[in-house]
Image (cartoon, rainbow, N blue to C red):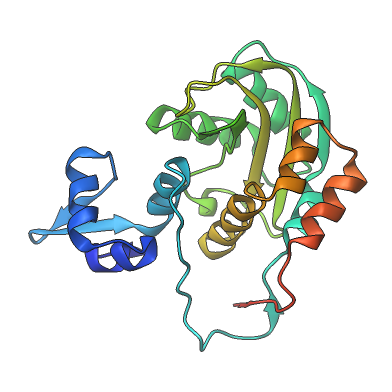
Length: 227
């Protein structure tokens, strides 16, 4: 989905002139169409998350109520929580993560690995405090039907090009069937990582059940519909 500067300003809760300034000097990815800036919604969320700027979802109210968006807890259960994941650098660690993922047979792991590396070359997904969020730019490149987030605690911290310059030792890798679910999972992760209890469990490499319970406790009572 392509956004105008006005749409982006609303999503980020800032003035339009601030969005223009970020495009010109802050690295916010945008391109011109008929003289007007257009911004990819998924890329805007990626950029906002990397800058620790809140992103407000504005999904249409008339969406189907057939099912609900996945919870953070359910996505972590699907993706799995792994400890002492090895790797001497970013490339090796991401390869190890891809090997650990519970993927359908139709998903080409090499394609996924290349997509993750390509995303990192554009901009590091290290969001600070030793945490990385490696993910593909467009979930449509994968044949994923079940949303998941794979949480990996690394055997040793690695240089990740994070904004705060700190090495990364925790990786969340979300996989989604579409952009809307992708944005939802990133939003839930962003919220959870501001919670002291959840962050404390990450810092001390808490047990799987403790992390899942902490994630479940952060979920709102109402669930939003998806297509």
